[in-house]
Every structure is written in structure tokens, then in C-alpha cells.
Length: 371
Image (cartoon, rainbow, N blue to C red):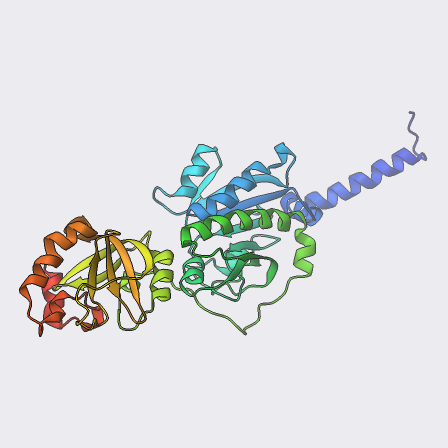
């Protein structure tokens, strides 16, 4: 083609040069790139720490644009220490940043936070043209806070889900909702089992949200204040039994919620005893039918090799305990319970009880703390 000054091709070339001059002199190229980028693939910065977060990071890694996906580039921010997200990033050669961050210089389009645990300041959030998204394992505003899965199980919710929301500064889990998906809570599931299922579901919902992010942002919905609940971190204080107040069902839910991390505990003869291998509600036969049991009463069931303990509305069973060392129900009965029963008189039945923490005297607690 021969170009002439009056030709159409020359006119188009001149117009393109004019646009480029304005781009170069008016604003940095990175800023203009943001305006031009209205959809994937995204330059993404991921914030996370635990195994729940790893599921989302895995799916983002497999959806990078080199694989025909929706992520152009992927870098990771995590906390110090040997934690799952850090290990995954190192194993997959992802650029890794340690919290707190320095200046990002407009390197990213969107951020993603999953189980990070640190508040992000407004000036950091504003560095991302499409904001920062959060994958949260509950149907917000139900169970805002750091431990939604544990509280879902502990309170007996039958339905939960995952939420993709937009991070706002100063407070956790209050931003607008971009997407939600329901998930029925399986009967008698543990918090670990439910968390694994929600991690997978949340990762896939995140990818779906990133595919249509502009549309999701345009249709985002503010959270209702009705039905908002808080899910604080689990704490060892939650593990103490109060036999006279807790039902069989409450103890069952508590064990499934926290038992894999914090064993349920009670007091035996002034010492802390940890209750292991919970088997649920049990129907027992008492050797002495004349004795009326009270909450905290312990009965060894030889046929099932179970320690049965009376709570508010029935008996619950444990296959083992930890008292100095791990003991089977038979070991505890033969070494401790049977010996104590032989020594007591009919008026000293409290010596054979598992005692609630609230019933422990100050002297008992000081003795226990000194061990």
C-alpha cells in the first residue's frame, strides 16, 4: 500500500500517534491500563494463611491466563512463619510478600482475601481499581468474624454457605455482597469436614465472581443488619463441661465443633481431665439401681468399654481420657474409678463425679495451676 498525505491510512496513523502522546504525557501507562481493562484476565494479589485459603489459591493458580484462565498474574501476601499459604506459594513459585506490605505502585487490578485475619487499611484497599474481595464461609450477615464454621456446627445450623463480599476498612465482614451460595450442613459433620467442603465451594464461587466481576460490582447488595451474628475465635475456655447445664445434643455439637483442636475438659478429684473419643448419647445400665445419679456421675460400661457421664438430659460416652497420660475407659476404671468407688461411703458420692469447672473452688484451681 502506498500512503499519501491525503490518504485514509495516514489519517488513522496520525490519530493513533495523537492518542499515544496524550497517554504518555497525561497519566502513567499503568493508570491507563486500568481504565482499559474492564474484564479478565486480572492482575491479582492474594492475601491468606491457612488450609481454607489454600483451596482458593490453588484454583486461582490453575486459572492463570497462560492456561487460558482469568488471572493474568498472581502474587501472594501472607504472614510470617511456616503456614499453609506460604508453603503453597513457595512450592508453586508464586511471588511472595510478607505482611505488612510496602507501596504497590498500581501493580494489581483486584485483591482477594481468604482467612487472613488482619484488617486492611483504606489506603491499601484504594490501590486496587476493582477493590479487594473476600471469601467468607457463612451466609453473611450470619456469623461475621474469624470462626464462622465452628459456630455453625456448635449452634446446630442446618444450612450455611459461602459469601463473596467486597472488603471495607475498619471492620471485618461488613462489606457489600457480590455472590452467595447455599450449602446444607450434613448431619453430625465436624467443623473440619464442613470447612473443607466450604473451602472448595468458596473457591469455585470466587472464580465465577471474577469472570463477571464488573457485572457483580454493579449489582452488589449491602448486608442487612437483621440476623447479624458474631463468630469469635474458639478458645480453650469453651471446652469446659458444665454437666448440669449442657444437654447431650449440646455436648455432641461442641465436640464436633472444637474437639479436633481443643479436647473437652472436666475436673476429676481436683485435677483436669481431658475427655477423648466421644461416642455420643448412650443408654446405660447402672449396677446399683438404688443410687440416684446426679449430673457429672460416671459409670463404666464394660460391654462397650465406654465411660458414660450424666449431663442435663441423659448420658454421653467417651472411649478414652487424658490424665497425665492417655487411658482407655477400662484403664481409667481399673486404675482410678473402681478404686475410688470402693473407698467412698454412701454420703461421699461427690468423690465419684466429674465436676463442672464452675463448681471448682479457688483452692482446687490453685492446686491445679501449680501442677
